[in-house]
Image 1: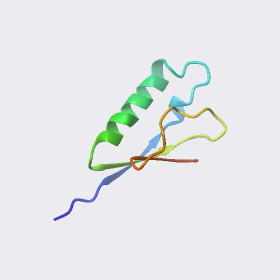
Image 2: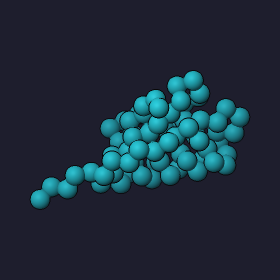
Image 3: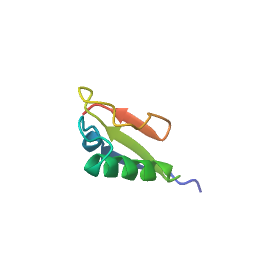
Length: 68
């Protein structure tokens, strides 16, 4: 039996800080999203604000970025 991946929709806007993208909440959000994306049974969909800076996570097969 093949297992279907669990789709997780994750709000990445917390990682789109203009001033402190390498610290605090932004760093935690990026780390958490990266850890989820590495799990083989998770399909991660990241929500981003196109008017703000890139959250530092490359869109890939594991992370799909869409605008809310």
